[in-house]
View 1 (cartoon, rainbow, N blue to C red):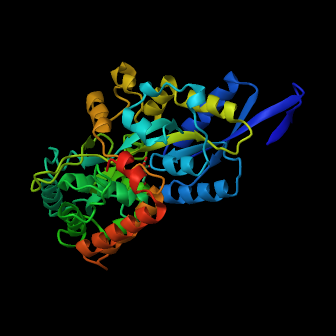
View 2 (view 1 turned 120 degrees about the horizontal axis):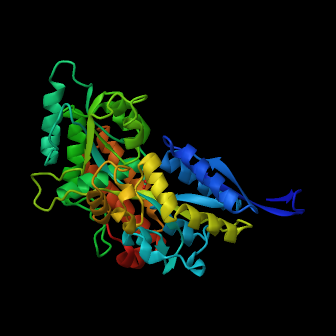
View 3 (view 1 turned 45 degrees about the vertical axis):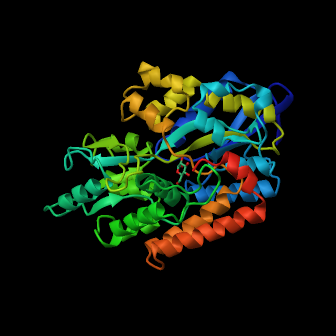
Length: 417
Ligand code: GLC
């Protein structure tokens, strides 16, 4: 897109930036883009909003990039998309710009690396967290079983919130992230270190049974969550309708604001606990987050990198943490006093949560793999299939996908989950 800048009589560089606008994010991004333009008078940046639902945004990007559209010039990628976009040639390698890779959490760099090259810079890190109403449950649950019994005991009281535990149960990427945490809690994985699909092993079956039992046996999760994303869960918790919530760090800011939240000052955040019944189970968070990459079809790759470097610089990350509570991807910032108070948990805990978070498989076929799992998990959760049957079906289809795409060799080295 070329325009003529009348003031200078030369071509203007116009970048389009796409991103989500959850909560106060939209305002913050607009503010940072404006500052960038003041610092770089030759570059104009337009904001292009994209859907918040991760799977919907992915679909839209794929349509644009398949059509070789150069806008948005900068893409906000989910942590699990980079290898796919890189392998398709849709985003440019960044190595020639000399990004300071060692300044970011290693797992976030691994997730953005494909075939030895870096394709995106980590913008903010997401980790799944357990939110709890401290006025109703003063102590953080030590196990998943305790989480359920705490929820049950609160729900049996008069005037208690309607829901025990709310989360993201719709058939989309969010469901996989929650599953990754339950899997870890029972000692299961999707794919093991040797690249073998292990998602139908007994630990994984138990994890899925637990998720289903929350809905039907213990009734601590509402059936509504089967259509919910991040925002529906946040609304329920923020309006005082839930005892616990699984979500990312972003809701803290809005939920702490007394003007819009019924739970300001009445909630705390802790890690999702492990099952007390599974010896190999461990408490873990799914590693999520956003990355910034350059659209391979843009006319202005250098200007696009300039903007990416600006948005991922320490000052902008800090400001993002302060405004919307999102976690920086630079470990050095966890030693910065200005970050304290911006995020809901002690800095060391946040840093450890990121360092011990479970990545989803790093592979160009992740989207297809995830879709298979989404369908099968959901089938079990709506009771169309038994968890074992659903996971056996998922494992068979994932194996077929890996064979069909010739990914077996690559996944042996790249997979972590
Ligand atoms: C958040 C996470 C992302 C995840 C998505 C699922 O945006 O950052 O990694 O895939 O939620 O809904």
